[in-house]
Length: 182
Image (cartoon, rainbow, N blue to C red):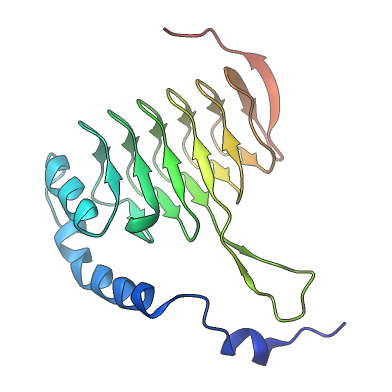
């Protein structure tokens, strides 16, 4: 099997509406990224204007990178920290009071390596309520982080994380259970 770079580059994985949305979102980026840090409501409004579903008192910091706002859902009091990358080609859902720490990377897109044309895969990520994705962690495509789970700093998640567990390492492995908060 030979890699088909020409076929891959000719693919159009987005609809015309998505291409237009990407252009408009890139034009709106300065209003998002240059907004003062405390203006969480302003950034939530901008994200909502582009189709994101943002819960009350959710915080998105100005340096966070949201790739496709219309593929983002955030629950009440959820947070996306400084320099986090939400590469949401597929949907990314962040539950109530969940935290995505600084420089964390949620990657909801990949390519099918089994096909020589490398078609785009848009695999959703779900982060459960009260979960915490720590600094510099990577969550791969199609993963589910259970309620109350913690993904340790710089961990690489390639399998689903059970609720109320703590994972760490590369690849991430369960290191202990966590007490439930109700």
